[in-house]
Image (cartoon, rainbow, N blue to C red; front, side, top):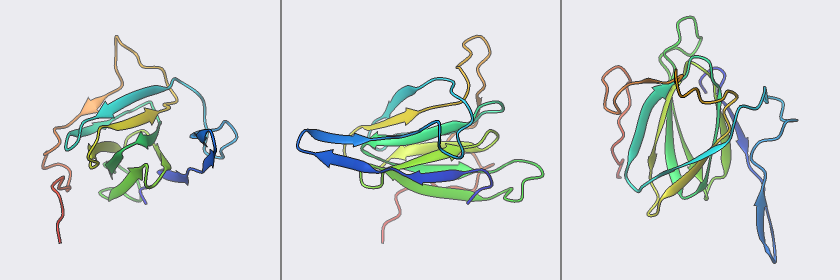
Length: 151
């Protein structure tokens, strides 16, 4: 796993009324501070990649549908520099992923329906000076192939 990336299996608690799933708690050992919470969606087959933050740590969970989450570590001095991680998270694998600042990340919706992703970053979004640094999804700077792997 890329240095600083942490995964937390999420526990779903069903009863006759429905389900409850805690995503992030302030007593999680990796919790730093609260910035904001937002929901983003991705349509089937769509890729949202690549970007990183220099000041912000993300805490990402897919709560409906499934995504293929990819991470790439470009950080100088990191013991995992150059590594790629691929995780499948969502309804069939409820997982929270902590993505540290400086790590490129993105995802592809691999479910047949729209995926809903909740992010709990530790910083507020700054509209005047966004903490987002982007590369195209098919950049040659990141050794990752988003295509479907059949076989």
